[in-house]
Amino acid sequence: MTPVLYLIACAAGPSQYLDLGVRLAQGRGWNVCAILSPSAATWWEPRMSELEDLTGHPVRSQYKLPWQSDVLPKADAMLVAPLSCTSLNKWGAGIADTVALGIPSEAVHMGVPVAVMPFFNQAQAAQPAVLRSVEALRVQGVRVLLGEDGYEPHPPKTGRAAEFPWARALDAVRDMFARQEADSER
Ligand SMILES: Cc1cc2nc3c(=O)[nH]c(=O)nc-3n(C[C@H](O)[C@H](O)[C@H](O)COP(=O)(O)O)c2cc1C
View 1 (cartoon, protein in one colour):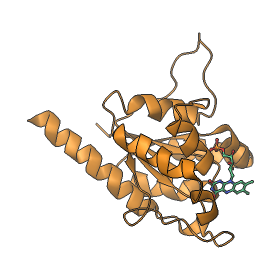
View 2 (cartoon, helix red, strand yellow):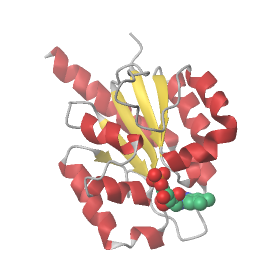
View 3 (cartoon, helix red, strand yellow):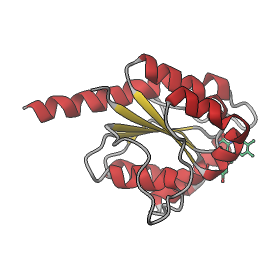
């Protein structure tokens, strides 16, 4: 069975190039479902059908209503990329007021491998809440790709959203998934 990856994007620069991440993940053998924060969904609004055609799944950006059923297959792994500074801090504080946060914040406690790669500048990263939030996610088992082995925040106004290191983020999620598969075969 083709493993299912939820690729979850917030409204940070590289979300505009989410299709690159989707294609790369598909090339590595994932069945990709895209999930967007409501703000990221407004960025994709004019091209949403393109993303749905590319993934072959509806793109979720709102919590479903209580009587609605799931529209996506069950995830084998999740990658939140790009993770915005705002969503990082909300997640760190336990606030899951978007489906883009609700899904991964629960999944990590249900045994699903979850990696995140943030994208924000050094001025945003300087907020004391950022380090606290990163630590809060790491203690829960989320692989936070920030710093040397992930994304290094850029000086303000110099972000290169089109050069977001999707491959590095996908390497991390592949390793987590492979480790879990190996553990489950023991
Ligand atoms: C054009 C534009 C670009 C932005 N780029 C970033 C970014 O790269 N990183 C970031 O953390 N926030 C960025 N923001 C701010 C976020 O979009 C904002 O904090 C938003 O509330 C995030 O919501 P979300 O995390 O639910 O997607 C940007 C905002 C705009 C309007």
